[in-house]
Length: 502
Image (cartoon, rainbow, N blue to C red; front, side, top):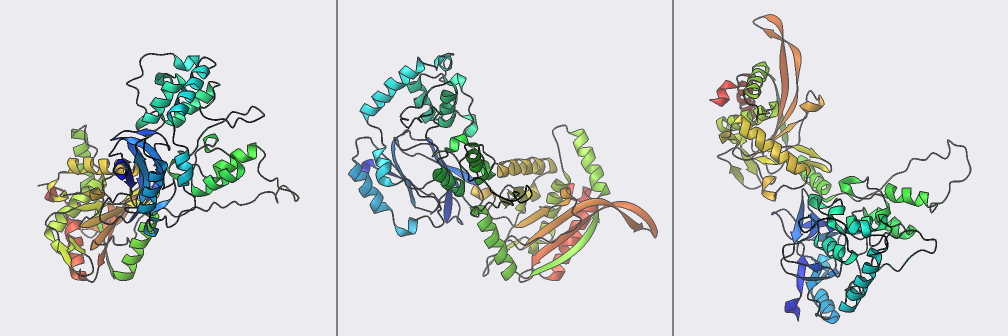
């Protein structure tokens, strides 16, 4: 029977990926899954990607719970036909789960396999819930049932199936899921708001308080989920103010305080009642990777730094002319820097290099990484073949990469690699700084703000817009004279931008 059982494994995206964090499941145990459906979001060191179903069937078990970290290849869940026996499911999981695939830093217990299998729906229970849904529709959900054909409304498969059981028209639901799809949570929230009850929820409180249903699909920090379980708080009741759209500890405590479930503070004056709360949460996969890579870079690569100032008044004038003559262009100073670096790398190819500790790799084209700040840290999407691109194309490429980087939707090949890196903090008013090399690249350019400074021209004092540039290079493979030559060429391109546009 194992041929009817299909595993959901942790994928490997990119050569450097060794593990991933379970960000969110789109289906619950017992849901029907169709080939091509989005199954689960996986967060790696730099991006969030979605695993899609390769086969159709019923989601029979979830092994990797939200918030857990699993190694590449680890079993995350099981899809099988409804006719497959529970014993076969358990045997399959047991044979495909090893110590190497266990979560390394999990603080949240996964759904037990036995309990997961017990919750798989049977045909008789589906008929019973459909009958319950029909009675609820006629008792408080009539408004949600009205409307035109909803077949074109974007909705998850689970939400569409439940909408049919509740008798709800999806045109009446505001979608908050991925790509604005109507999710299971959106549907259930609308049913509760209309005075209905959730299918299969028999745990109605004696005091008539509304039930919120299954909250396993809600994104929450492991600490928040554990406290919510301890205090009997449903995550659907909580606001979402944590990072990456997750419910955090403070959100759970706020609901608990409203329900008087938090212990009251006693004694002392009003000032004594004020306390400084600290929220502890596990370090993200991205931050782990950044920490490890930068620490290794500082420990292994002797950083040699050279500094130079460049006057950019002519560059600013050319930028103004380009943007005024092309309404579709929004060329920035950073775009000029990318182009100037690409041109300088062609003049001084010894800088356009990667070093893995044993072998040097010189590049014939300039693949320039541009540092972009995101919520969890820093990512460096790559402008490939920048030496062959014009300023407008570089501008459009950089803007697209930065936007998708902040959404966590870059492909691995779009941020892994690169032959040179630029880190620009000028927009924050930083005059000058030193950047750490992004291995295996051999150098990184730190760019400060362009500002009005006094300069001496032809023996007389004048005012010019000056930008400070600092190159950090790996002194094992790049000599000081080579670094100085590169900076001199770069300064020439920035001060006379026409020379790099020809």
